[in-house]
Image (cartoon, rainbow over all chains, first blue to last red; front, side, top):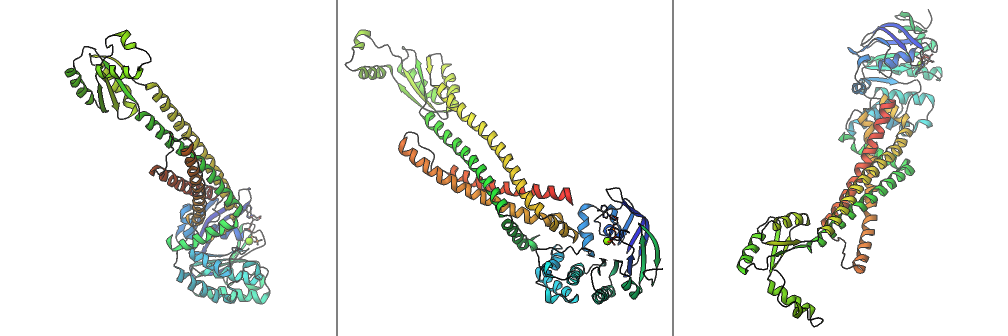
Length: 226
Length: 295
Ligand SMILES: Nc1ncnc2c1ncn2[C@@H]1O[C@H](COP(=O)(O)OP(=O)(O)OP(=O)(O)O)[C@@H](O)[C@H]1O
Ligand SMILES: [Mg+2]
């Protein structure tokens, strides 16, 4: 499903953030990307949905090297990858429902479908009750759930969750991870970037550890630390 | 895109209202430009009308040999009327001309008695279809060996014509200049509303919106601005023109302005369509530039 081959990334400011990354993630896997702040977790995810292009190497998503994707093709790649952003990125002047519906609207789906799927998605994350609230009226956990609802509304084969439990209490964090696992069980490849030790240790999933832009560990049924 | 038309319309209206001041600035800019454009078009139409009126009174006078017989003159009249561009040929015999001349002088002076016999030649009055043909027809007529002299007031006509040409060229240059300036202002004002929504656009693109999807609401907003500008310039110009032409018709009855002509309708339609095009093009350019530069 996802394969990174000799991938390096240097940002425009000259900072080397990823160094010769090789990584294979199979269909319907659940993988944690762990590592200290600044290790390059977010950058790695940005390469997958092509917010950034790698400086060298191949980034293969569903058999396509997205590093060489035409600009016009990028929107279609993004519709197949749900992203839960570290900073949510909800449209501030729109309600939770409108935010979720937006990801469907861009695909040109008919109105009735948009409504039905957005509701289903909000129901799944337990946000139906707050559907008409605006983002700045939500708690951190609610924003996180709204963001997840938007990310999965197109039933993408891949879901990327960047620090989905940041600023959340342990119980809510646990709920969110349960939700992500549920989505994974519905045939979705899930990548979770986090430095939340507890959830990683509890879930017993594959763990890929990054440090200073290198993979220092790749372990099945892993834990946060060695 | 049509499944999203309603969404785009709502987005465009929202954006128009949110940036109300910017929207008004753009509408006013387009209005001013179009009013100037309309004044130019109306001037050209009216000058054309005056040229037409003046030149319809223009004809060529051709004088022939005194000794020409009436039969030959009749043949000549037929010949002249066959020259391309000639509308009508009147023949005035030297006897008729002499009679008119004497009548005109009346009793003021018995010039006729002084001169004695009739000194006037036969005359042809030739009317042409359009004033451009005057010189050409006059030349053709003068080629006939029995014609001694040809007269027409070509100078006045060509002066009026060159005035109209100057207005046309100068006006066209002005219109192009103003259109560019307007486009620039519209591009920059709409750019501000696009930039104000930069974060939104960025997020939209991250969740899979195409550039076209992002552009449509802005383009519709541009069309809205353009239509409003076009309509207001139409209203302003129509009211002003009707008032001016009405007064002028009273003050200068011999120089009537064009009224109730289909060309007026054409001018007004051109203004509304032009406004719409300006607004749409301005929005398209500005949103494309922001998208290209930033995403
Ligand atoms: N757009 C950018 N331009 C330049 N440098 C950047 C950019 N984005 C990130 N960086 C730098 O790249 C490094 C890796 O950033 P990244 O966001 O990938 O880390 P991270 O592992 O996600 O960290 P965190 O756990 O804090 O989210 C950091 O040092 C950051 O300062
Ligand atoms: Mg990060």
